[in-house]
Every structure is written in C-alpha cells, then in structure tokens.
Length: 214
Length: 322
Image 1 (cartoon, each protein chain N blue to C red):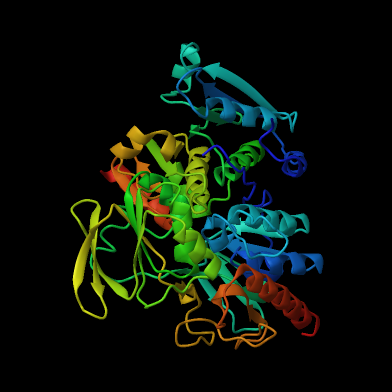
Image 2 (cartoon, rainbow over the protein chains, first blue to last red):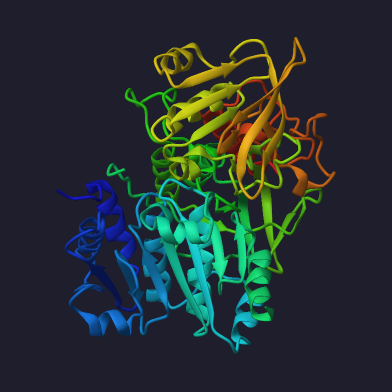
C-alpha cells in the first residue's frame, strides 16, 4: 500500500526535478511500541523513489546506537533531513497531514541552499554565539503549524547554533504533558521561552532571541 | 488516527521576488487561490501572499460537504491543497509573508514586507476573517490552556474529556461533530433561543447521547487555576447562573474581518468588512475584494470561489484598460 497519492507523486516528481544538490533523509524506527515508525519510513521511501537526488537511510533506534547518538535521537519515529551537512533539522513523530508540506519545503530549501527568511532575520541569526533548541509541537490537522515549523527549520539552516525539532504532540504525550501542550502550534525555545500560535517572522525571531537572555 | 492525508501545500520553491507584479493577491484561502488561478491563466504575473495558513479557514475544516463536485464531502485541507496545486501549475508564486504596510491609493500599488517594496498594477484583497473572541473573563488567560478556536488542531488533546462548544452555528456543530471522535461529553451553548446551524448538522448531532444543549444561554466566564476547569453560563430568560465542569472550551461565536492592516485607505462597513460592488471593485480603483472579507450575506467556500473568479476578471480588465 502506498501513502502518497499517485497524482501528488507526479507533481512532486516535477518539483524535485528543480533540485540542485543531493538531500539525505534518515529515518529512525523501532520494531515494537512505535505506532507510526513503519509508516514514517514508508513515506520517506516513497519520496526517495521520486528523485535520484534524494537518498534514504533507515536505522533501528535500539540497535544502531552509534547513529542514534550521532544524530542525537531520543525518541521515534524520527526523521533527519540533511543537505550538504546536518543542519539540525528533526521531525519527531509522523510528518503527516499539513506537516508533509514542511518536509517538501525542507528538501527544496536544503537542495537549493537557501531560505526565504528576511535579511534582518538572517543577520540576527549570524550573530548567535550560543546554542538554541527550538521545539515546535504540532498536530497533523493543524494548518497554522507548518509556518511555525518552517520558520524554525529555516533558522536552523541559517545558523549552526540552531537545532529545530517538529514534535507531533499526540505521539509523545509525556513530553506534551511536560510542556503543558493543549493547543498548537506550541513553540518551546531552550526550555525557557514558551509561546502558542503562528507568530509573524519578526515576533518569532524576538522570542528566539529572548531565550538567549534567560 | 491512521487515515492520514499527506498535504503538499507549501510555499513556492521559487521565492525570488520580482520588483513588480501585475497582480498581488493577499490571502491564500479559496477566494485568493481561485483569483490566482484565473489571473495566472490570463498570463498576468501573480504573487499570492499568505501570512498564516495556506488554504485559509477551510484548511482547518474537517469535512466540507456543500462544495459541489465532492459527493462524499472533502477534507478542507485537501480541498485547499488541490486549489493551491492548480494555482501553482499555472504559474502563481505563493509565499508566506507578513505585510508591513500598503499603499493602495496611488496608481501603482505598493506592498511592503521584509523591508522590500513590491509594486503591483492591481491588488486583490482576500485575507478573510478570524474567529471572534468572546471577551469574557478567563478567555484570554486560558488561551492555549483549554480555550481553543480550532477543533481540528487541538481536538486530540481532549481525548476522554468534557468539552464545551460555544456557538451553535454551522461552525460550532461541524466542529462539535469532529470533537465527538475524542470527547467524553459535549456541552453546546447558544446565545439565541434556537440552533442556527443547517438542519442536516442538527440531525447528526441529535443521534449522539453525550451532548447537553443550553440554548438561550450566555457564557459569562471561563474558570480554573492553571487550566480550564469549568464555565459559567447564564439563562437569558431566568437570569439563573450555572457552573459546568469542562476541560476545554471551543469558541465559534462568529467572525471578525482581517482588515486592520489596511488602515483607513479603503471603505469598510461598520463591522470592518470591505465594501465592494458586484464586480468586487472596492472604493479604490484597481483594488478588488474577494471572499469572506467582503460585506456580504453568505460566507461559504462556494461564494468565495465565485468572488475570486470575478475579482480576477475585474483586475484583468482594469490592467488592460489603464
């Protein structure tokens, strides 16, 4: 059974023909007690088949310890999207529903090595000297979430100091409870700045920079 | 939750912006997307700017059943996806941006964002509406802590819990039906003495036993410590108050037009909706309005799509004759 509709595949094949550099997808899975691990890797497999410029590696969370440590994976399913290097972009939980579009955007951004962030944001990110970890909690049916994920992931592309995770909230209830997530998108920066909703880029950046002062 | 869809809606890969466009469309809901399909097919260089959610309000609708062509209904996100794909296929450039300012009054329209100024011969405003706030004690405090305006986004967090829906119009009942997949019980509160939603939605709701209806009731406060724990409602006839324990409150009490960013350069009605004629012409030549943001009676995907087509044709006519 395939997950991506045939007509979407055709469209994506055309989109991926515009890719410049290779992109690697890395999927972390687990045999037991992971409802969406299998499906997540299957979707990536389907994406990989649409372009020669996309490669896929699949690792087992319990067995491939070296890779788990290398990519700093602490829960599954997990997806890493890598361009010419690992920019710290992670998806924890299945990137389904509206988040699937975020994966496509990431692939294209990394392949073309550019983001749509505005100049001021890029300049501010260049000045970062301390590490920032952005976690964006989402649900697949939330149409306001992809922009919040995209901004975080693009910030990770622009700065080596930024790591950015999409977290599908319903698959990680303990983590969601820990951060008191009951509305999405919910964004947690370095565990010290929390906010809900899809903020404009300028305000989002302000929140990110705020985390450095705390 | 295994019946996932995989939405391909996203920003255009080509995000290099030109200095000037024939048409700039503000808002990527059904009205803006339809307008962009028509302007792009007319070979007008088109930029579609969205600030929040590609697909607009419809993208957060679980099931759209009254848009022709989909006899079984269609998920709102999927419908938006199809429209976006269609628009991009004809050459529309779609970007996420937050408008900083607009000058619509001069012959050449100026749209400013990211410290850039983009010029346009014509502008179509299709930035829609947002859910209206109740403006009662507790609403602001508990936003994201039990108060929500998007059942499809936040519904899964209320699995097995008691939830209230405020407003029994089409949105309230439609989202209520969606919430029934998760919740233990629903409390439906309506200010008016009757349910305002379509009869078919009312009939579907009535097949469920775990719903309590409070018609002709006004919600007066949302209560709790850190999270919502109850609501207080008042019977509008007897003035008697009642506290109902709930963990979540979903608010569907109407819409407010997203026109603030336009300033006072365009004529609005007293509720802030854009005044326009049947050609979607606003008070400013070359500026057209489409969809929910217009002063009109029926706000549906079908009417938004119609507005979008007319606005696009008017924009084309304006460009060709100026």
